[in-house]
Image 1 (cartoon, rainbow, N blue to C red):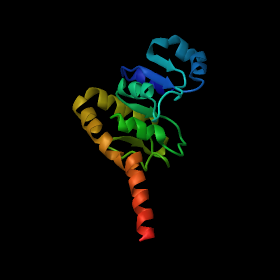
Image 2: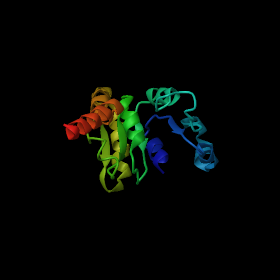
Image 3: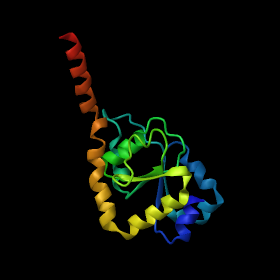
Length: 165
């Protein structure tokens, strides 16, 4: 339904799906009829790198303009942090796990009440206004510094040191 609305609003897009079993989405009749609008990438295993996310996943984030997540439940929000760290604004629903990470109108847009039309409207707005898209992108990386592993590690060490003194 979401992709159909993007098409009806004449929004140009290529939707990239990444993860296990994304190939199953290809079985959908709508996807089959519009296969050129979708890109499928199997799960990226991190077997040869020390850090997460894998550099192949970072490249995927960097090859896109927006991170759209239509999940109604997102308990950890790792993909939101990863996308923002790569400078990708987030379009999603205002739910637990997301609203602690994404700042509405600063590094993305969040829809209350599962309003898909609002998300479509914001995607169209950002497609038409490169200045606004660039403004959101500029705010992405600074907004997730508080989740940086080194930052968190140093805070934890400082907390333990304060207890020892």
